[in-house]
Image 1 (cartoon, one colour):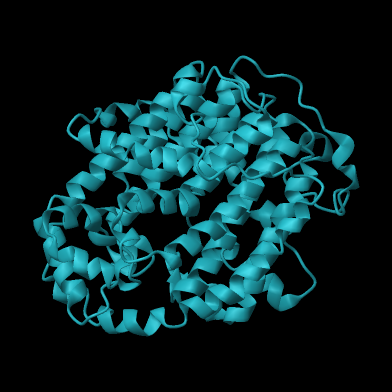
Image 2 (spheres, rainbow, N blue to C red):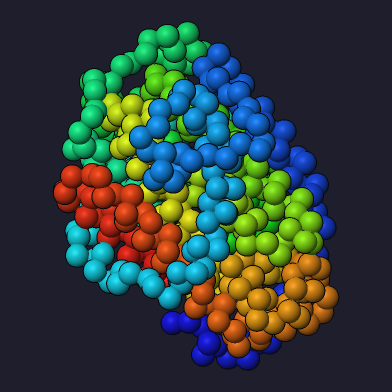
Length: 466
């Protein structure tokens, strides 16, 4: 459904304008309380990560297929990719828009096995393993940190991607024996008690054992980002229940999120793979950059689709892309190998497709299905793809976007114009374009159930309603 059959938008958004005005005032202060604690986590990687900065004018060709045969220094290639990849992706936006009428028949993608069923035996014990890894002697912190894991109702989308990718890259040519890189043994806590209930010590040291731990790390980082996001957005609910800061307090929520990131950092060190630590550390950096980008954007920048794509990469796609890449690295593939690059490309495009569909569902889905209020993005002053596309047809929307929908009646008017425009259709086409690119990234992998399940996952992302 495209959402055009909704009832009077005024009934949908009753009271949202006033709520938005009240909510945005404390956001900057909340961010200032949150960012220092996030930044302080990065020294966990001191002596492990080399992170030189590339010139801001440098463009990466690594993301495009043109550079798959080129070989550059691993640290240099990854830094250029992390800093400039979103600009390279944004530069392809006109091409993406030009091909909006030529989408693939993505219904064929569901021919593969159900991705969630394929890895269900490994996913089922994952929550219990994570809860054991997060145990602490402080009762309040312990309850807050495990708040979401005590009522896990989702399909654990990100760990599923990691485990499917781990199986797919395990069948791809070019893998070598995975070195334990014992030089990391000096990192404090590496020999600490982080054994979970699912893997034996011997299993934990196998490539798939380390990839399973990566799936846990990815879910922990994602959950920490949700806790922090809810503090910044002053959200009341998450996953159909109370947000952590509502159940406890802002202070406890921030500390709980920090604790999750600290534990994830320690779990990364236990993998004893420098390139994986570096890659996953970039996902932490991206989360902070995305929040800063969202808050600091000027009125003119809020009108740009390129900013929207950059922010979507930082806040959503980066974790999926970097964890997919890390799965290939833990599978024995070289840092700059075609398989590692393909894993990254798949995560990058699937992550963007996921976020774009999520932004569309903010207008077309129901609050009960989403587990959060509808039209939350506009209520927070954010312009996502549907509104940006609609503004191309109705210039009146540009004024509303620039002032963050702050005046009374702005939300109702924006919703009405969106429903009259092709904004939702163009947004779905953009999501389909990225999903198609994700499928194409898998072309170098040998045929397997896991590859077909990753393709099926692209169909699920495009067809979901929550």
